[in-house]
Amino acid sequence: MIMRSASAKARDSKASNRRLSCTRLKGHLKEQKGRLYIIRRCVVMLLCWHD
Image (cartoon, rainbow, N blue to C red; front, side, top):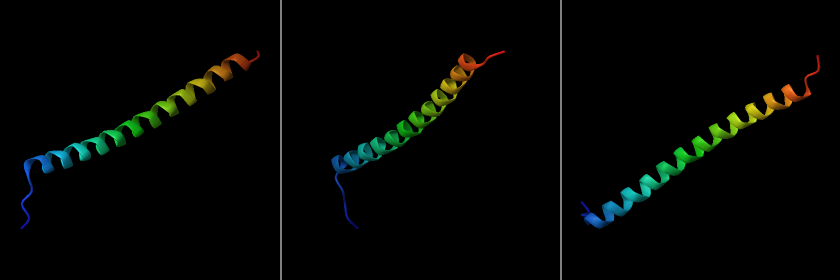
């Protein structure tokens, strides 16, 4: 069994949290990009719509 120091555990925990938050950020940005695409399409449709 390998004993690890508290600082090594904390360092690994921070790296794991960073990866997790990066993944969450990517997901959030992807969602926002999709929303902006839909809004842009709606605006273009409304501007180009002729009666």
